[in-house]
Amino acid sequence: MIPASFYPTLRTLVIQTLKQGPTPRHVGFIMDGNRRFSRTNGVPVEEGHMAGFEALKRVLELLLRLEVPNVTVYAFAIDNFNRPAHEVSKLMDMARTKLIEICERGQLLDRYGIRVVVIGRKDLLPADIQNSVAKVESMTAHNTRGCLNVAFPYSSQEEMATALCRTVQDSISQNQPTSMIDIETIGKHIYTSHSPPLDILVRTSGVRRLSDFLLWQTTLDTMKTSSKIEALGPSVHFVDRYWPDFGILDVLPIILGWQAEELFKRGMGFA
Image (tube, rainbow, N blue to C red; front, side, top):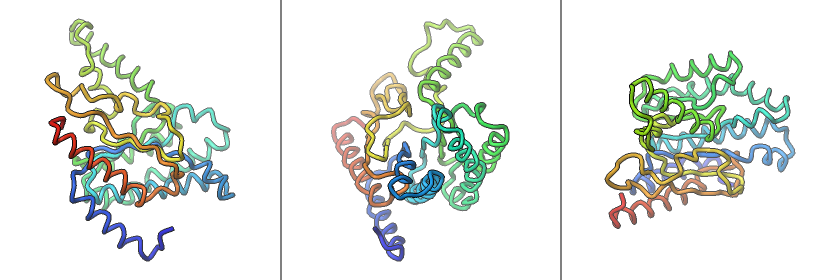
């Protein structure tokens, strides 16, 4: 456990070290383990979710100071609506306040030019939370250098189905044959199309699966150009630590590993 008094110094050292190498443009997180954190520590589930939100703020600030411009987080899966009603209700209550709390750190978001975009089936949310989502997005819409994508509520399969439907609709409205539809045209309708390709995907809690998150984005990035493959796909990391405990010492080896891979790819002519 890092003493609180030493944390700012350690954070500065880590940031200065990582800035010596290339910086990822887009990092994704499956923030898993809040409930198991609660059971392990003998606290109510809602306290585990609150601790998870504090971890998000901590990691987000670290990445922004590292000048990572795009972060995508898995906040709530569509399937999570099938959890016990009282737990879903608590999560919705937290969303009502925490979405705005993200923006109360407005100086940090404005300093790095980061806007908030909520991706997924927002129409499934209660009306007042939809209003909170719209407020958060509006409050940060003037920022254009990067993006915090909050997947809430989200399903990668639903994302791909929606992208395909919108692509077909565009093709019909523009009187183009559907035979012209390809990976690139579908990719333009993926929820994260406004962000660069995913560089790193991290899942906490020791579970080794993607759980219907960013499945399109974790494939080889062949949609940007027809002349060559620009990247070999994102670096995927499964970390044993529960999300509320995830922090700077977990981020350090992940970024260092990605930097080594990136320098190797550049040397081999893949990037």
